[in-house]
Amino acid sequence: QVQLVESGGGLVQPGGSLRLSCVTSRSIFSMSTMGWYRQAPGKQRELVARVTSGGVTVYADSVKGRFTISRDNPKNTVYLQMDSLKPEDTAVYYCNTFPLIQATWGQGTQVTVSS
Image 1 (cartoon, rainbow, N blue to C red):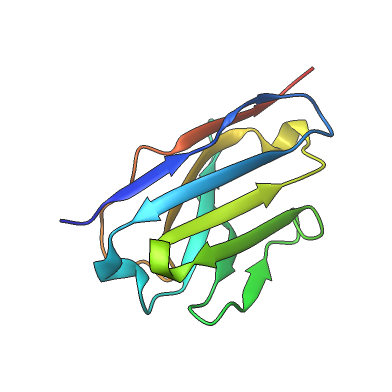
Image 2: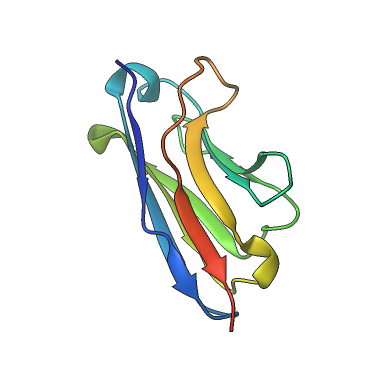
């Protein structure tokens, strides 16, 4: 059974930081590129960052220079360090493979950036 468990979200002021974590099943993590996605109210889910099994990273323009994705392969865990947060970063954040290879999503973690 595939598991994706996101955590670390919360309420933060503009300019603040959060670190998200996602623990996954080894079955989908070990050789997969992993991504962090987000979905804001009324908008489609979008990919914000991805990291290959070898550590190569790619970022959406909207988060480049502010977010850092990383992974701990032995722990089947992917992280998203978010700095200089903006109100437009408010969304539910999810992790999953990139590209998607199965239909299961976790519950996500809510990030709210507001003063």
